[in-house]
Image 1 (tube, rainbow, N blue to C red):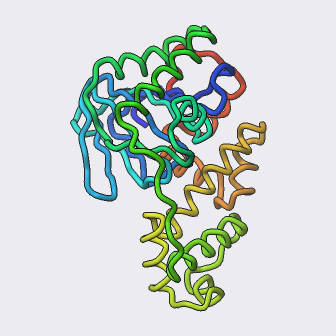
Image 2 (cartoon, one colour):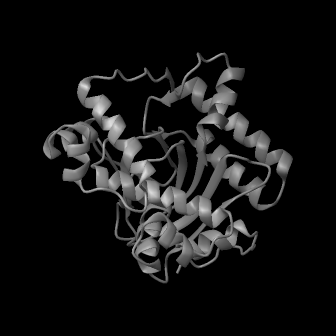
Length: 282
């Protein structure tokens, strides 16, 4: 990251199941990845570009970005000055609890838009961050629930339909299970296809159709997710890299930063409650 880039990725005890990111990026690019939970962000300066399965969108200052679980996406500077934003990453369970209070049908709720311009919602996202950063637990929890209720009421598309299991989808799902079980030492595409009784190209096509990413990119994302769990548990970055299958710590650093937005060391320091106003992301 350049000296002008700063980021803080952290969590607050009053918001279990929610990660927070406050950052300014200029040249940093998030590689294509997907989250288990939601992305709710407000752009506070500059322009963010969001690469989505159906094309790219831009969000300028004041714009709100909503990304549903398991939606492959990338993020990059939409202007030479880069962008700054505040992000909330609520887990599915957090959103589901609010949806249940609103009598939304059971299932994974989805938002029907990616970029919207709503000053009230933008301010509410900032309010969650401000309350958490000032250690006002009651306000942080309250602001988050009010925000989610507003978004579900105005932009909720209802639970996503369960995907059917065609032959190709079933093969893709089984491939994902096998890759997850062999995170550190995965098979090659040809080996995986042979084990599943299909061809490499057919497997690649089915996997991308179901999950929006090729197997190797999905595997990288899963390794980063597991790395986060290990770092949260206090495991050193070097040991974490070896455990999840990265060749060395620099390999972990590169992929972790491109997906999470901060290096593993900075991420782990925040988990140990090191309170800096806005630590440098380098």
